[in-house]
Amino acid sequence: MTLLLQVGFAAGFGLASACIMTLLEYPFWRVWGMEGVAEWQVNWVMVSKLKKKKSSKPDMPWTIASHLSHGIIVGVAFRLLLYFLYPAVPLLRISIILDGTVLGIALWVLFLLLPRKLYESSGKIGISDRGLLVALLSDSLYGLLLGFFIATV
Image (cartoon, rainbow, N blue to C red):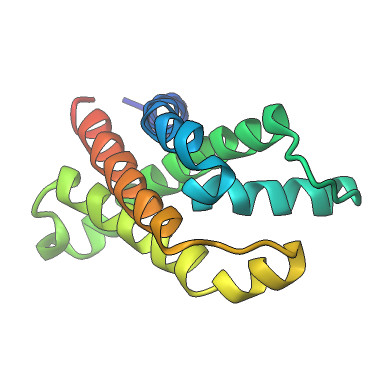
């Protein structure tokens, strides 16, 4: 299978994984609002900065679209990383599913946990610990699903 086709599949798998992840996050949003899903808060901040307009109410279609587009980008990046890294370091290849799960946790640390204060101050929001926990669980699921889907091709 060509690299271009693998990247195409990875984009689809990233979107599918992000859709499932979003469905998992939805009940937490219904119960706790935006504070229940840290990723949605972060996407809301990014969308408002891109639109140069902060509102007290999130623009949910754009927030979710941003969330799903990140799933596509990460799916492609993960596949390219596997493509170039696995041949160079054969000992890394234990399980693509495990690698995907580790990726999900790494994404949570790099894009939610470490820059938490930056998002809070720039977006004038408070990211709750429970929102971070939901994000950790959903990012782990995203990575696990992405690894599973990519391993099947």
